[in-house]
Image (cartoon, one colour):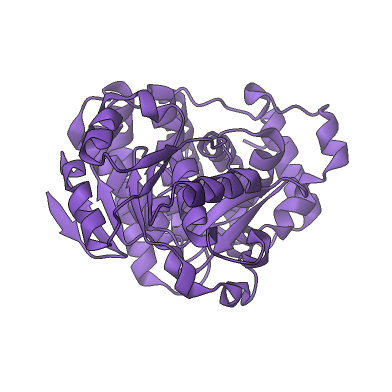
Amino acid sequence: MSDWNYPTAIKFGNGRIKELPELCQQLNMLKPLIVTDSGLVHFSFFKKIEQILPSADIFSDIKANPNGKNISDGCAAFKQGKHDGIIAIGGGSALDAGKAIALMVWQTKSIWQFEDCGDNWKLVDSKNILPCIAIPTTAGTGSEVGRASVIVDEESQSKKIIFHPLMLPKFVIIDPELSQALPAQITAATGMDAFVHNFEAFCAPGYHPMAEGIALQGMKLIKEWLPEAYHNGRNLDARGHMLTASTMGATAFQKGLGACHALAHPLGALYDKHHGLLNAVLIPYVVNANSAAIENKLATICRYLEIEKSAHDENSTQTFLRWLIALRKELDIPHTLADIGIHHDDAIISKHAIGTLAVADPSAAGNPIEFNAEQYQDLFLNSISGEGL
C-alpha cells in the first residue's frame, strides 16, 4: 500500500476502500451522495460500501456519455437528500458526472458557461464547489485526478469540457480489488483509452518533460500489464498497475491530447459509443496521419517500451504500428469504426461534418499537426473503411 500526494491525495492498495468513512470524516461529509454507474450497484463490493456508509444515498442515473440532464438530475437528488458531499465511484462516466455535480449543485449559472474556453472557469462561484472523493473501478480515463468533466450538451449534440481547478477530487482511493470483476471487453477498451492518454500527451508539442516522463512510464506499464489484466482479470498486480497507468495518463495529458480525442469526443456524442473503444479503434489511423511529425517521438517510445524492429520495418512508425495493431488484435479490439456500427452511409455524416466538430474540439490544439476540417473528415472516413494502414 502507498500514499501519494500528486496530483492530489491518493490512497493506493488492496482493500483501501475500508478507509472511505475516515476520509469522509476528514472532509466533514456526514451525509454524502454516491454517484455511480447503474451496473455497479449490484457488485458485491458496493454492498460493502453501503454497509460502511449507511448515511449515504445513491444516484446512478448516468448515461455512458453523461449529459447535461444527468448532471441537473444529480444536483436535484443532492438537494432533495440534503447531502453535504460527493463520492464518485466507477468508470469515467460516473467520475465525470460526480465531479460535475459537485461543481454545479450551488451554482447559479448554466453548466455550459463553464466550458473550458478562455477564462470561463473564473465565472464559477468557487466557494460553492462541494468536496469530492473519487474511486475509480476502471483503468481508463484517469478522471479521478482530473480538473474537468466531459459532458454532452444535448442541444448541440457535442461533448464539452467543463473545467475548474477545484474540481480535482480531495481524495482518491485506488483499490485494485474493485476492478477485479471488470469484464474483459471493458478492460481492453478502458486500458487502450489509458494508453492513448499517455501516448497523445507524450507526442503533444511543447516543453513539459515531467508530463513526458510520466507518459512514457504509463505506456510501459500498459504494454506489460494490459494483456495480463485482459486474460486474467483476477490478477491484482495487473489491475493495480493498470489503475496506476490510467492515473498517470490523466496526469500527463495536462500537456495536451490530440486528433484521437478530437475525433472520439464528437463521435461519442453523436453515436453514443464507448469513449475508450473509440480511441482504441482510432489510434493507429491517427498515428499514421501524424507520422511525419512524430517519427522521433515514436523512436523514443519504441526504445523505452522495448518494441523490437522487424527486418521489414523502414522506420519507427512502422515498428510502432505493427506492435500497436498486434496488441489490439490480442485484446479483440475491432479494426475499424464500421466494425462498431459507424458507417459511410450513416445519415448523421451529412447532418454533422465530423471534421468541423473535430477542429473545434479543445483536444485538437495538442495534435502534432494542425489538421483542418477536411483532413479530419478524411481521417474519420479512413477509420471507417480501414484505409491508410
